Image (cartoon, rainbow, N blue to C red):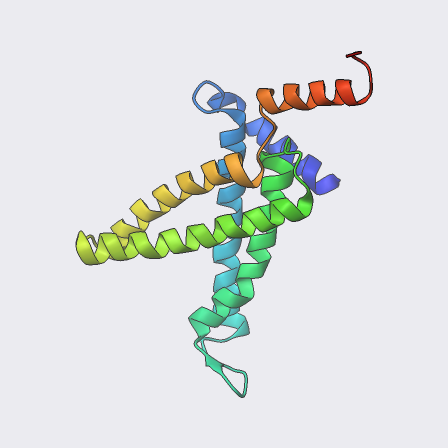
Length: 179
């Protein structure tokens, strides 16, 4: 796939100065997540300002404010680009089926949205941080949460124990090792 090769080439070209400080997978996650975030903000800006023209989205039975409507329009796009980047660029060794990964990715994203909400409320309302400072702290925590949930849940790779267990099971089931 041309897009995958191009993205991998760009990442591989830019990684060498950082290889002593950050693992390749973490670097890939940062670039892919950062790129998807830039896409999200850019699409949001375009939809809010030029598609919705800062006006209510009137659906006859429901009117949605432009900032929420822009989020609802953009979210599916960046949800799937984020999933694709994570699956094909960052966490490529997962043996899980695509549907399982997608479901788990959705749960991770829901967790990120919930964590954003809780942390913003906590930092702004209880710690009395300025909202922008609260958003910075929140984003940092959510990125860490997202990375580890994607690595250890959404796109989980087989551990050595699981691999050796499966290998022994495979050997016994195919009568390679006689009992």
